[in-house]
Structure formats: C-alpha cells, structure tokens
Image 1: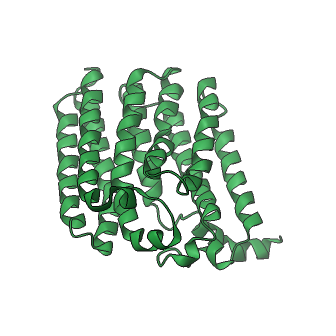
Image 2: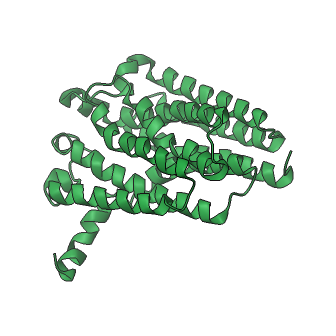
Image 3: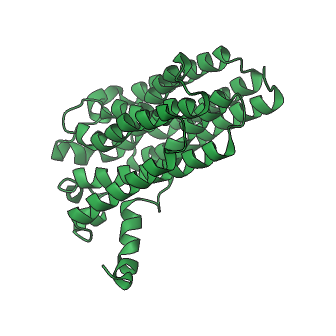
Length: 293
C-alpha cells in the first residue's frame, strides 16, 4: 500500500480502533492508575506511568479491532454497530488482523524495559484481550471476563513498580470485575433486543428482570472491595470520601437505568468514566495530603 493509499484508509483504521470513542480507553486506564499509585505509595515513576498510559491506548485499540473481527458477521444485524468498518466491508479481515498484531507488537516492545514479571504477565493479558470477544458465544456473563481483561493492568502495574504482585492487587482485580459487570451490563441493556435476535449472550440477558438490581449490587461490591483495599494500604479519609462520591454517582446511574430506556442506559455506561475518575482523584489526593501514611 502506497502512502496515498494508507492516508486514505487511515480514518477507517482509526474508526476500527475506536479512537473517536475514548470511553473504553478511560475505563481501562482508571484501574491501571489506581494500581500504579497504590503500588508506588504515591506518584509512580514517570517512565512507568508513560508506558502504561500509551500501552493502555494501544491494547484497547487492538482489543477493539479483534472485537469487531469476532463480531463481523453479527454487527451488521445490530442497529448500533452495523456501520462499523468490518461490518460494512470497508476494511478487510486481513487488514484488521494485521492492524491488531501491529498494535500488540508495539505495546509489547514498550514494556521490554520494565521488570521481567511484567513481560510474563503480558502473555495472559494478550490472551485475555484477544479471547474476550469470543466469550459472548458461550459465557452467560461475558462481562466478568471483560473485567479480568480490562483489569489486568492492575497486576502488571504492581509488577512494574514493586517487582511482585501482592494480594491487594488481586483484590483490586476482583473489584474491577464487579465494576466491569456493572457498567457493561448498562451497555448490554442498550443492545438487548438485537442480542436476543442474533443469539449473543450478555449479562443483561442473563440477569433478565433483575438486571437493574444486579448492576447496583455489583457497584456496591466494587466500592466495598476498594474500601478494603484502601484500608489495607493505609489510605485515609480523602480516599474514602472519593469512594463515597463515586457511590453517589452510581446511585445517579440507578435513576438512568431503572426504566431500561436504551438512550439513558447508554448515558449511564458512558458516565462510568466519572466513577473511575472520582475514585482516582480521591486516591491521588489522599497520597498528596497524607504521604506515607
């Protein structure tokens, strides 16, 4: 492909990577930042922070490409996704696979200067990112698997800073699983009518009429586990205030999803960026005000 041809196709690749919709990057980034701050007992080394931020963008982009490749025969039947580049044939399957491989390779090169444990952990991280889209065929709650994939920056962050993955990191990963089930169930509630028609399995379908209650229960589990993490690492009132504020945001989400309106459910999903950001703000401020507590 010549330079002119690549320039013409670049907008399609950017759409396939969903760089025009950064919510996925943010939902992947916030738990990673939580982990880096806790692992470093405050502001992490700048080069580690830069590597993880760039790596998050690259791996989320690769995950989107693989997701659209896996769903290429389904997306055309879903109102919200039928215009995606792979679904319309604007990008070929070969192009998509090469793009995903290239993004993953660059992300792998990025982590080479870090602790060897990070490199070893990148293997299951890549497997999780690549296999998640296919779990919608047979897992009743694939959002749980998504939570592991989206949260694997947590153990990798601890490995990068501390050279080990302590129990508190795995507890944070469990918290992230519950958070992912909460926000991605809101997302799945948008597509439920289409998913039922084409046979995709989602938590919104599995939970059925208890979907709203399940979302709120998962939010509660998330905040309870993160509170336990904060107390275990000696965090104080500012962190807990951040968690309380995030819980207030989750209660607002209840008002959005309780009627199961598709537009309002999607708004609740997008609004989870503020849940993650509020938790991070409380954590970072707590370390600034009470360093080494």
